[in-house]
Image (tube, rainbow, N blue to C red; front, side, top):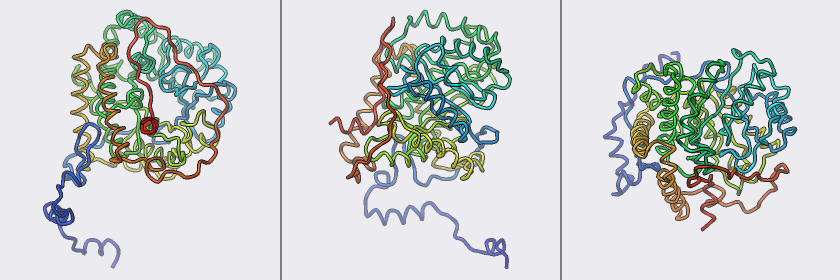
Length: 479
């Protein structure tokens, strides 16, 4: 008898949820099923441990290439020469993308490349631009940096058709993360269409505008708040393209997304899938054929811990797995020593190799959308979509993302969510391995590079309550 005959001839009992629930209730000894077995995320959404399989579910498409996603390595060294050496080593070691993080950026976490005219040329010296994806993280002067990048590419005589770029322009992320804008909201909105038309005329490829949710996540936002803010930012970008007289069906693919993924792999997978569905709905609402959301995922800064930093490797591996399984187009893993300062070579290599092992050895892309039809993930995805859409509508009623930030409305909701979460960690309802649970008894030396923290820009015309990136372990220790 072969294996197929053995399997087909086996009599497995038909699954029955009611029978399973009866067994569970015996184990609970009178306790409530919902209280014990059903988890809830920060938005209060139920996560059913064994929901019925979704019939007729359609897999969400993923990027088609040699690697299932772009392996992005972070370039944030304050020394351009050292940053170039790191970038060359990263590309030689398997990285297929570089994220250039400049000083003063919301996601620089105190460091970043110097904001000088020659920095691009120095950092990207020797980098094969036709083979490496280059993204600019949200920058305090995004449009000036975009002009510099175009000038640099022109000087290098790069063929636009062979480039993969993301300019990362997101005024809202800069406003939220730095607490200031260099011009009024009205002036910014009036000047953007002309700038966009200029870039379109040059035929610049890739992602031009980005809706970046990382600044909201790392300040304490719930999943729905992060998604709602990103959707509000993306819809604002659509309006700018419309005012620039660009056909939305051609402009929409030039809008990208950046979000955070953390150690909750199922919630992170559902968040990525929800973003895809939300962007599809938004495009349908303006009556254009939906383009696939281009998503950059970065491991969460707020989940990183300063104590027992090796535990961060486990957290970032789970986050990277979730991003890959969820179908992110590019992924960046923060070094596990990031809470200690500017990370050294070993931590950078671990961050890079985490992705390479998942992509090239674990082959988590073997199935296009591995959670398709999963009752729990599909239900969570739908619930996130509904909660995020409600947050998006709330932001729209507040005048859009920029004006919601100017009025402090979104910040108030995010800070409330952050404080509730921190209280649960302090009370013991939640735990951080190596920090609040099984704390490390011995602190081992951590390699960091010599670098002075960079201040945030303070010049501006319009100011708002700044959303500061705050690690959960910092908030717990502060009390």
